[in-house]
Image (cartoon, rainbow over all chains, first blue to last red; front, side):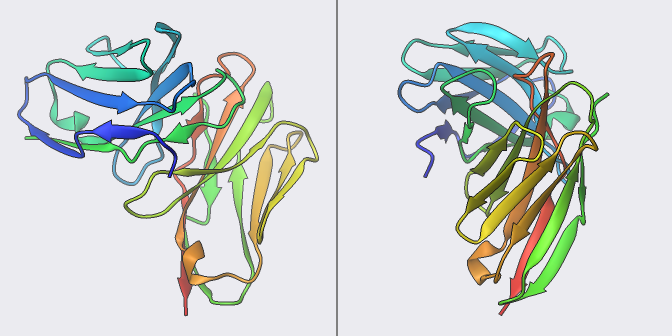
Length: 113
Length: 113
């Protein structure tokens, strides 16, 4: 096991709603990255947080936002949910921002109806 | 748009046979290449992080090579076992924005007993 946990495991929301997904990193890991994996695709980078500041963002609209807390936990918030947001959301923590190994959580499966 | 391609998309191998698959990535501005193994219902597990052209890494029966000049990496599994059944993902990082990992779509490996 990687020591990275995510909650909830599964979630069903309706279009237009807002959702918060949570991740608990390995202790001591200053960096957390969030990914979206749609069916049949590889994970896509949403953004990364380093020491509570956003440190890079992928091609996702501003309605995807995040927070990182000093206790190694983090959140991914998605506003105004769309059907295409249905996916597996993964978080990954690492010691360093660049070439260090990323340790993934098991993911949250979000279904938007 | 960075493109990381993995081939084949799926592979069935007889137990005991050896196998390999490919990850292709842009050869310019290379920073790092990651390999992950992802078993169903588990978290993706880091296998290797490779940074130097000509790098070869080994972990048990699994090894990987890296050619940054031509933009490819091979993953080899020697003497496949049923527990090797998983999806194998590679992820590429460029020098600019090295924190943003770009994943391939994965190779789904099934070992037949």
